[in-house]
Length: 316
Image (cartoon, rainbow, N blue to C red; front, side):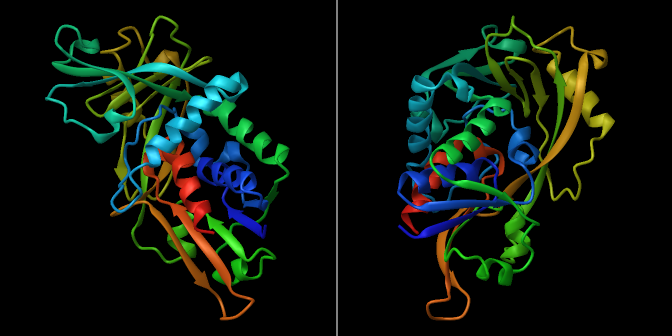
């Protein structure tokens, strides 16, 4: 099978590399940063497709990802993937979402059965992928299958891509695709996060009126902001205070003194839809490069990466 270059070592790039290796390709992942320095490392991350547009995307991307997570959870506890209960809580009635057909044990609820005293809620069973474990597991999966992860300066010009020895390329550059491929539909969405200690008494994760609380093995992630077109990963103290005040509906005793660290990340959102599409670039003839795009996952990179990777690799 021909050699494949994967641009980007976030969760989408690494998942795409694994799928390409499983298909028999010789794969090199090119990245300007280590996987634990990517935006993916800042994800909580519960397997729910949010902050993403899916128009024109194959409808089975979530089902394919759920099948992968089911197999990973069953076979390899070191991956940091586990089943858990997630709640959606709201002051207003909740909409019926398509992804509810792919999760399990869906149950609707009303006050006073909803956590946080909210009027409306639903619970379901899905996966949690704890990124501090999950991303290193993906890297190990790539190398075990014979792939390579190579650190290079960020690609800023298409000529750099044409000069790669690989003439099949999976473009998983996220926000970088906006510059590299002049895609004006790509927009950064800043999320700001407060991390507190583990909360073993909290047996579920929850998204509530735009905020969320995700308990993990070693800490708890509190967040919920979606600031479109932000130009930096700056943390705003006033926003962190808002997140903590909202989280007290779920964790009443949480305060500023409990915060271990704060950070912000820029999600790679794309207007209209995430992009899974092939094109040929460069001079015509044997030297041209076939590029398959796989980016624009917004806040659903962990959730959809396996499904979009399988479709992208099929386009090589």
